Length: 115
Length: 112
Image 1 (tube, each protein chain N blue to C red):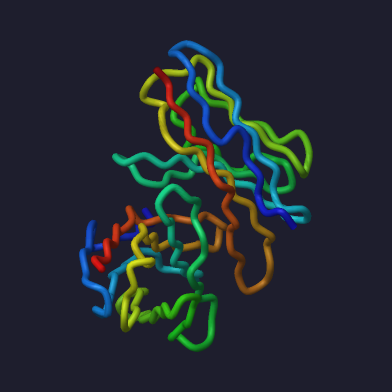
Image 2 (cartoon, rainbow over the protein chains, first blue to last red; image 1 turned 180 degrees about the vertical axis):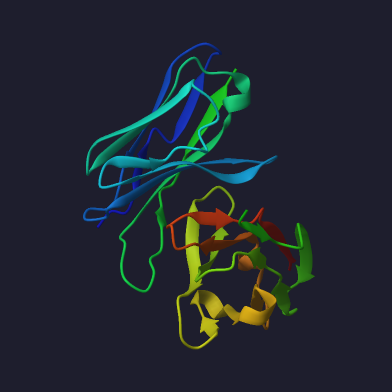
């Protein structure tokens, strides 16, 4: 398996523009997670899905952020409108729930810079 | 609320020195414990994990960690670090609700 795939790897945009980040989880995994990493706040969970259904979105900073998972192999994180403080690395991760525990596999991340 | 504490923000060691990075968590239920490593410019990779059984867990690249339930700790150790171990290390706790909580990370710099 190719692992978790994210695109784009780097995104530079101007304040006010819409940004869409994409993620393809590992085939067969039933959980998908979106994280944000910044120097100030470290790694934060934004939202996660189970079987394509959003389970916990309490980490989504505000209404400008939205995430969807239309099918088991694709998810998007959208920021509209973007602001400079959204600049961060956004990671997608997936996992397979198993009895006895599971681990999350992380994608390479999308480095977002909002000017 | 659940939390994960990593005591050291930045650790600087010479090659061949021994390493111990502290991790404490606050959660009363059953947990799974992880250490992830992030090399410069790269994504998070799993170093080791504890689910159950032997509390001393061995991971990749000579790393190990010990789960001490009474202390709510899961410290990471390596007897002799190498320059290539320079990275950021994250402790994480997975709760029964499948929420993974990360510590703030410890940056390790190994001087050749």
